[in-house]
Every structure is written in C-alpha cells, then in structure tokens.
Image (cartoon, rainbow over all chains, first blue to last red):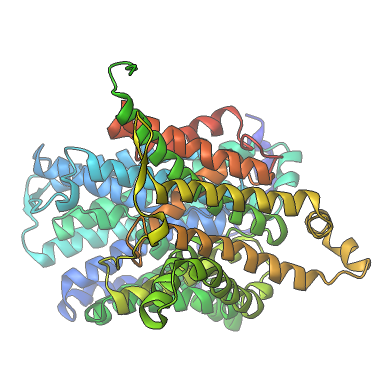
Length: 325
Length: 295
C-alpha cells in the first residue's frame, strides 16, 4: 500500500517523544489509586467501574477519534459477555481463555456489522448500528445457548491459567485491573499511532483524506473492528466478574449508557471516558433504589450535556490547563 | 377455499392484516421522521416516546376528563405537537449550527426522560383503552374475520399518509417546505419565516407520532415502553427506504409491515429480525436506500 509514505507526513505532529509527561503522571497515579482501591471500596463495584471505563474508552476510539457515532455498542459488549460466559461455564475454559474467546467473537461481530454500517454516514450510521444491535438482542432473546430471559447465570470464576484461583474478589480484582488497564493503554497507543493520526484526518475532513489517497473505508472498518473488540474485552471481563451474562448487556439502553459516559466525560479526550464511566456507574450504584429515576436523571444529563456541556468534564479541564488530556 | 403451500387462508390473511396494521404504524412514524429530517436534518430519537405520549394523552383524556376516542384523535396529536413546539424552541433550535449527531443525542435524552417519567407514575404494565363502540365487532368476509377497528386503523393511516403527501407535494405551503429543505437561506431571503416553519414542521412530525399513538391505544395496551422498541424497527424502515422521499417512506412502511406479516406465517422465528435482514441486504445492494438520494 502506498499509504505508508503518506502517513509519515502526518506522524510528527503528535509523535514527538512518546507519551507526554502529564499523561504518564496521570496513568501512574491512576494505577497507584487502583492498586489500593479494592481495600477501600467494595471490589466488585471497583471492577464494574473498570469494565465500563474500558467499554467507554473503546467506544470513544470510534466516536471521539474516528468521528463515527455507533448506537449499537451493546451488541459487542453483551455479545462478548455471552460468549465468554458460555465458554467458561459450558466449555470449561479458564478465565483468560474465556475472555479471549468472547473478545474474538466481538471482533468478528464488529467486522460483519462494521462492513455494512460504514456504507452509510452520519445519522444513518447511528441508525444502522442501532438496528443491527437490536438484531443481536433478539438473537440473545431467542437463541438456545443464551438462556433467554434468564441469561447465563452462575458462571464459574475458574483458575487463571489453570493455576490461580479467582474465587477471591481481590485476586479477581487484579486480573480485571490488568486486563482493563492494559486495554486502555493499548487504546492510547492506537490513538497516538500514525493510524490514529489518519483517523483524525478523516474525522476532520473526509474528502480531503480521500484526495490525499487514503482508503478511507479501510480505516473506518479497522477502527470499527478495534472499537468493537475492546468493547467485547470489557463485556467478556464483566461476565467473569458478575458470573452472569444477561439481556441487560445487549439492550439498546446499554448502548445509550456508553454514549452518555463518553459524552459526560468528554469525547475525543483520553481520560474523559474513564471519568464518565466512574461517574455514571457510581450514580447508578447509589441511586439504584430510585428505579425509573435513574433513567430520568440519565436523560437529563444527556439533554444538559448536549446543550451546555459538550466538552465534557475532562474536556473542560483540558481547556483550563491548555493541555490535551 | 384454496390453500397456499399448506397454509390455511385464514392464517395467511390474518397475518397479512396484522402485517398491514404494523405497516400502518411504520408508515406514519417513518413519515414523521422523514418530514422532520427533511427540514431539520436531525433524526428524532424521541419519536417512539412521542408516539407513547400520544397513546397516554388519549388514555388520560378518557380517564381524567371523560373525553372519548374521536376527540382524542384530534386533541392528542395537538398536545404532543405542542410539546414538540416547546422542545424545538428551547432545545433543538440551539443545535442547528452543530453536527447533526447532537440532535440525535438530545432527542435520545428526551426519550429517556419521557419514558422514565411515565414508568415512574404508571409502572410498566399497560393501561387498557376501550375500542370506541362504533368500531367494535367485525365483519365476516367469508375467508377471514375482519375486526372493524383494525380496518379503521389501516384506513385512517392511509388517509393521514396521503394527506401529508398531498400537502407537501401539491400545495403552496408544501412548496415552501420543499424549497426550505433545498435552501433555507434563499427561502428566508424571499421573506418566509424559516425558523417558524422549522418549528411547525417539527411539531407536525411529532404530532403524527402522537396520532399513531392514539390509533395504537385500543390495539396494544398503553404502556411507557410501547414506543421504545418500535422506534428501532422504524429506524431500520427509514434506512431501507431512505428519507429523501415522502412517498418512499410511506410505501416502505406498509411494504415492510406486510413482509413481516408474511414472515410470521412462513418462518415465525425470523419475524422479529426480518426487517433488519432486509436492511442488511439493502445496505449491500443500494446503500442510499430504495428511495434515497444519497447521503
């Protein structure tokens, strides 16, 4: 491909000297906090936050950096969660293999849906991804292996690599920490690679990217598949934490939630989705007893976020600090 | 009577009718989406919630004020349309200079609020709504039994769809509307109040959704989630038809309803997803939609 020559022109913009100091400091501080966190709060809650942080970061790769609004990311999150739960429970896979199997399933699903969805743009793209995700939902509702309304329950936690038991919440916590933190670092790398630069170029001005000789659709498909894959990694990990895969994970409201997390935290920022996920999951946790009010509050955040707060929490911080975050 | 591929004609005709009724709702709802999209360039995600609102307003009129079906058929769309006016003025109009995706996100939030509020006060179990007396009962057509109300739904939706089509394609008001779709700045320069036209168009589009909600009230019980899943199917209908053409939206709506009904006869397991499968095929063959003009 002739693309390699072109990308080098764009590369120097952000590729100067690897990760900026500020980002390094934030990542190290984050890791330090996350290491002591399970001893301060309920570990399962912390694991839930981390899974959703990875999910939102994966979604943000597509929306914030690729400029593509998918309204069907629950399909990959939930689809991977079903496959991982099935692999662990029925096939007796060890946790890491179950998670990998679920992730691979999400990648395949992302490839199938992405190849069709990128044929449309803008709001049509959003509608197409939503419709396909609803198809996945109906499949999960009707198929044999997904257990319909019950989902796949009491998934065994198993032994990591066949050696380390994950029955203990703390052991599982560090497995989840490794997976999600690793995933987020990997996404960071993708955003700051030459590939990520081309994505930004396409997002900013697609006709120009085409005229520069980029095969825009290949980039779009690849970023779609990557985003679906990491969303799947998050979903597969979540199924191991809660020992459950259910219809909630594939429902359209889950697709909406990840959009909300990204919007609230700040789309197109590195740390925004993590903040957004932490805020939303915490809110759901504390307001769970209020029932439908959670939905209403989420709707209000959506409306206010779009009208008044489009940069998101981290977006505003970044503007104050005059640094990309 | 004849039998087709071993399917008794009662079953076939029954499902065809059911498909035609679903198609009526698809047509009215996708028509509303197309009208709104034409001028505002946004996808109205709260369309399903506004359809639900129409059903609930009809139910409230009857329960709290004793106002019957026929008045509700006029009043409920007006009420829903009025809420649309407010929404457009207070929120949507602030977003026209931004990426169209923000309109989608905003209306999604509005849908969550409306559905959440109704779920809070009325729970998820449905509220029954009586079929108006004059339309109860049905006709025995020899090969099948045709409930009067269902026939009325099809007739009413056809009247509304073609009325809307006529208004947009054949009247002066419609000509302004089509002109504003093509070039709002130029139309404004001719002295037409384009922002007001946009506001009224949005109100009209959601009023159509409210009308569909009233039509649906006696068939399906009125419940807060009645529009939530339906709207996703309507999105697929809109992708298949393409939103460039009013008549296209109407025909695609009825056509897909019938196809869905036929699928329920010949392959029941596939009926929930057949529209999505058709969408996938259309995306492969003609990505801009059957009646689309590129996008």
